[in-house]
Amino acid sequence: MAIRLAHNCINCDNLMEGDVCSVHKVMVNNHYTCDSFEMKTQLKDDRNCVTCARYEESDCANPDKAAPGMLCAAWAPQQANA
Image (cartoon, rainbow, N blue to C red; front, side, top):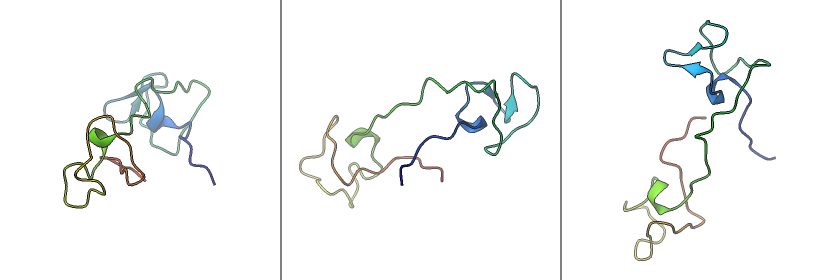
């Protein structure tokens, strides 16, 4: 099963601080979506040692080789919201 970004308020460019929709002027959460949804442009797939939670940590799979720009099978995001 593929994992995809949801078209919901959490990933929408219209989400303002305090979980308020700038279009509808109401509080929202990750269960909401609408026809005014605009995907955040800052989302990116930047997977490499610098963005890995294991970089320069004791559980790094390749401590002698790990470097900015390198990617390995043990990459883990620094922040994950599930």
